[in-house]
Image 1 (tube, rainbow, N blue to C red):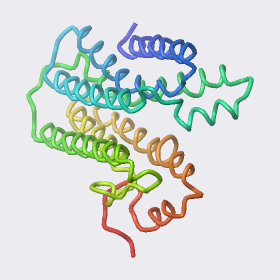
Image 2: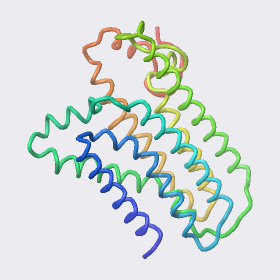
Image 3: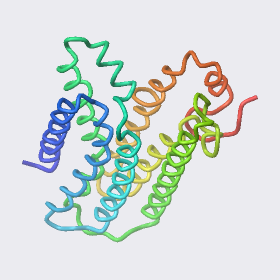
Length: 255
């Protein structure tokens, strides 16, 4: 069984465990907590089972572990004691008596598939012959660090804003959120572009470009921005926010 089949099996088992937990808690949004931890599992599994370690794989694993721990801890803290996220609660109502099967297929297995595709650079680095770092590796690390700082700061700013009772019902436009409506998503996407740059310094590494392309597409067109902004479609203040502020890449206000 090759690296990719082993990783696919690992992710399949992992997502099934989260599905069972979601049934017991009656809360599908716990899958968001498992997102970052899933990538940690993939990275560590491929690091531990590799025959010959290389420093590029160790570096990427360390970056993913750091990102995954921070993200999962943040989401766990944010969701603790709260009801199911509005997105999953809406699907639960829409799917009716088919919600169990559709949850399994469209939430857990589908996220598992995306996890497998996005983690391709991590799996690809397993078993690659040792090679020293070059300038592109350092650029990749700088890109990743930039994304990590942006996502972490955006999450912190949003969390602090929500904890202030005076801000209830208001649109967050402070800090990074003044220049992007979704700076946290931009930061996450940026990190995966950094990981791609590091992985691209290996034989056939350019193939890994579909990893950041997929996560960027998902965040901007599928499960990220569209769902949140549809939720605020009847909020005039948010519609003004949409009109004046960049959706993804931090930029100056529109007039």
